[in-house]
Length: 407
Image (tube, rainbow, N blue to C red; front, top):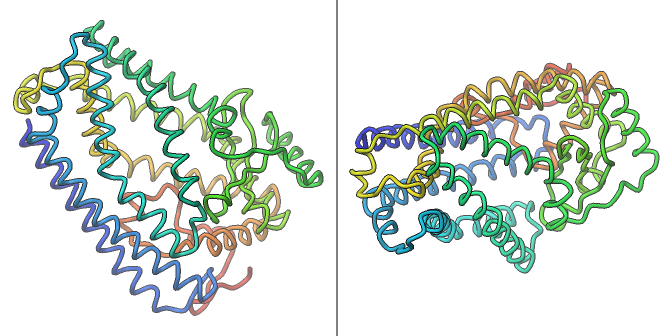
């Protein structure tokens, strides 16, 4: 069984590396063409950023392999034997939290480079060291408190039920729904300042859009995203009565009113087409598959890893191996997601116009330095949104001799 997992990981590694090298070659070739969608300077910057990001991905992929190999050959068994706690639930939580903490510390240099090296170099990151450190401390404290409680409850479920994986799936799914419900009203304010949208005309237009779509929200808010990042974004957060519209201050500063309404119309399209419920259902399906798989791991796998088949070891293997399962499932979910994005674009166009949504997407791509081309394999493996060129063509934008027209 362990040999099969290693073989599967090697296939996963080869596919990821092959896709990254193919993406670099594809982008290097495309950057030699005339700029489309983006301004010429941002077109070249976007290409350079994507190439640099893929090189970092290659490095982190190799690092992840070394870390994975280290865990399954000696790391897990060593960690398992060093935690000498009699209470099984407490021992499981200590084992899991130690595993996560070690992974976090070993991966931290890559996160630091991405934030303060790569993203600073290309003008994305605006975060300072103090804010970054505070973010890490807040996240760690929240994880120790709530993550510890979650893993304690999961450990108790594993120990109490023969078919623990089914009850564990139900519990985890309820927790995920609860987190989504409280996220905009409890978690976001811990990291960002949310203020009611001051532009009365814009707020009134947004509320009209919401009413037309039949969406009741708890308000429209501006988020001070610029203190960490210059990229533009907006989202609908929360579930039930906690739903609220959140606009990044960077988005408000860069888009015209009709463009902003078109972007929000796109997001409302997901609501109208029940994509949010579909995403919840697909997430539940993925979670169910994972729990079913990891709930039926054979005893010999734990023997080959020199570990006892305990609640802690089961959940650690879940955390260690779940990226492999996600990698297999994501292309299918990505395909469905890309289809939903086209339908949401149609609704966004109806809320304002195709021209308004096209203009907004062009500005978003230019400001976020999103390179418009990607290798087909990268799109298949990772993309949840269609390539920007395809979205704009659907909206009626014409491209001629490498230059974007009609925007």
